[in-house]
Length: 145
Image (cartoon, rainbow, N blue to C red; front, top):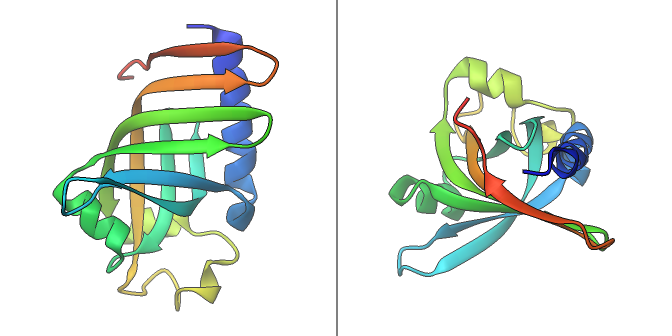
């Protein structure tokens, strides 16, 4: 593991999470026909690259896919980098998780943290693949800590 590249990726993810609606990434899960299906989502919170939190609709296709298979891939990229994270997701509807994931701008989609269609996806990465356009690359497994 190249710690400096992981730290670089963590800084990118932290910045994306702190911008709310500008922190877009793609989440890929397996659909009802066994095919991968990607959707764009904003990162609500991040704890390095190990744990990411997303706010979404409980009745969405993405959540329905994740109810059937909790294994997902999160891809964060730009012209300068590609961060691919593979792991599992939990669908949370408890009040504290919803409060923790809330950020300014979500009121455009939900009536508030008690909105019954508002839920939280808590992603835990198990492995990563990093690529930066300056030629730096790294791939590895994240510790379970």
